[in-house]
Each structure stands twice: as C-alpha cells, then as structure tokens.
Image (cartoon, rainbow, N blue to C red; front, top):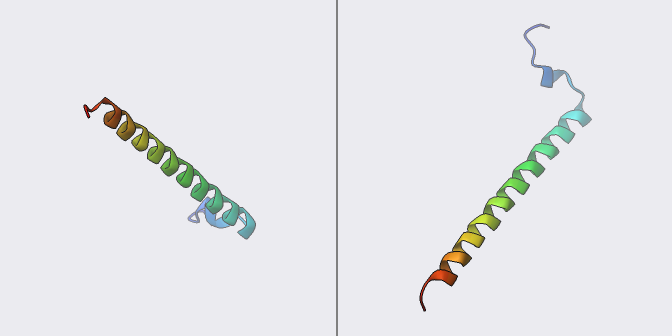
Amino acid sequence: MFGTNLLDRRNKPERIADQAWQQLVSAVSSAGDSVRDTARSARRGAAAPG
C-alpha cells in the first residue's frame, strides 16, 4: 500500500480528466509557441529590405 503511486489510487474518471487536462495544457502551450514563432518570422520579414 505504501509503495503505490497516489495517481494509481484515483478512480478512472479522475485519471481520464487528468489526462485530458494535460493534453489541453500541452496543446495550448504548443499553439502559443507557434503564434510566437509566426510573429517573429513576420517581424523579420517586415524588417527585411525588399
């Protein structure tokens, strides 16, 4: 009992909700990175002589 992980002791709906939350956080983080990269590229393109 003492060797079990606390996460393993939760019921299935809690585990599913936690997994969904982690995936959402990851997706939002990735989307934010993409937006920042696009904004940087756009600024570089606008600053380049053309």
